[in-house]
Image (tube, rainbow, N blue to C red):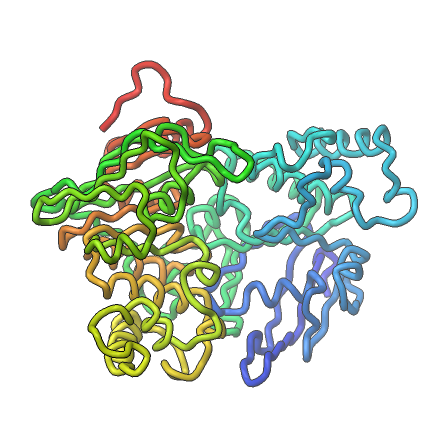
Amino acid sequence: MDNLNAIELRNITKRFGPVVANDNISLQLHKGEILSLLGENGSGKTTLMNMLGGIYFPDEGQVFVDGEEVTIRSPKDSFAHGIGMIHQHFKLVDVFTAAENIVLGLEGDKGKLDKASIRKAVREIADRYGFDIDPDQKVYNMSVSQKQTVEIVKVLYRGANVLILDEPTAVLTPQETDKLFKVMRNMKKDGKAIIIITHKLHEVLDVSDRVVVLRKGQYIGDVETARASQQSLTDMMVGHSVSLNIKCPKAEECKDRLRVKNLTVLDKEGVKKLDNVAFDAFGGEILGIAGIAGSGQKELLESIAGLQKLQPGAEITYISPEGEEKSLVGEDPLDIIHDGVLLSFVPEDRFGMGLAGSLCINDNVMLRTFRRGKGNPFLDKKYPAGVAEKIVNDLEVVTPNNNRIPIRRLSGGNVQKVLVGREISCNPTLLMTAYAVRGLDINTSYTIYNLLTEQKMKGVAVIYVGEDLDVLLELCDRILVLCGGQVSGIVDAHSVTKEEVGLLMTQFRKEGAENA
């Protein structure tokens, strides 16, 4: 093995029952290299990296670190070999400070809560790579990017020379992403080896030196980033040519569908999650909602769907295609359905709120359609079965069957197709989606984008909460930007720049900013 290799995987195979998640995969990661790992949902990327992180143990194959064969059976083993994995969902204790989280779980001198020595060590790491971190700041007071910084510093403090970043830019603004990439390049110059898992191809081309592509659990190949393009990488991932153009045609006519005024929502502790939000949504448009994580996106959609308690003075008015107005204030989801409001909601939490993971596709469709008709809904399984079959065929859902396999056993992309397809099958006039493509591969994502555009062209008012600003600019007609629960701007998606939206996400609109 070349002594420049930090990691080498040889013939790695991992099975879960009859499913082969990784099939005889071999790859190398060089010192001082940023390697991107690409593949569709279910291709085995995270499973492969979880074996380096000590979460899983391979059924077959060998792992080499700096030329020596090693055995990694736990995260502790992974750290002992200088490997640190930063997961997409941070593993921090909210009530602890950055310093306390950094030393949590360590033994010996490094595990002692000596604030002076920790502060000194953290400052040395920050100065070397360009981090901005306050060791004494509580995690619950941090932004998403600050929490991510703590996670990265935590593994560096433990001596990691190999870092694995799983979807690190999923909830970052463009400015925060640029800052992260600058830090990654500094770590690369210092000889660190970095693996980044991401679905954002423009980021792959921007920050990585080499790309490894997996497809259906198998190694397809690797390519130098300088010789790749978004189109070539997509074709490698999918196995055939895929169009990367998001269509955004103009609807012939836009009609009033929703009016929101004076919308204020408090959480259980009395903290404002939404503060005097006001906007209109029109049938025949896609209204994008942008904002850093926790800016009130979730509360906004749930308020419209009747899942949040509103403060006095709030107005939410639904306008039917016939022009009839209906107030949704004080209505719960069942009231809204009984009042004939044609609203569909694709929530952020697929299983916690959207689907029942233990039920099959047919039964999950029945949960949404059983109120149609007057007979016993649980005896009428023909209708939901037909809807489910259409969803599976139209959206190319990969499943062994529709009526026996629990839906939680499907890949994330197939689960999302079922959820979106089920809501669209209800023929809504107002369709709300929260992070409809989060964590989905590019092929599935474009399927969802096309579905939303089709609904828009049918006169549906689509509200799309997203985290990828490039997609928001291409897909949407207007973008409402939330910052700290307030509307910092409503802009024309076709004329605004990504940087302008990024600024609105982090600061309230300055004097002279335009509303669209």
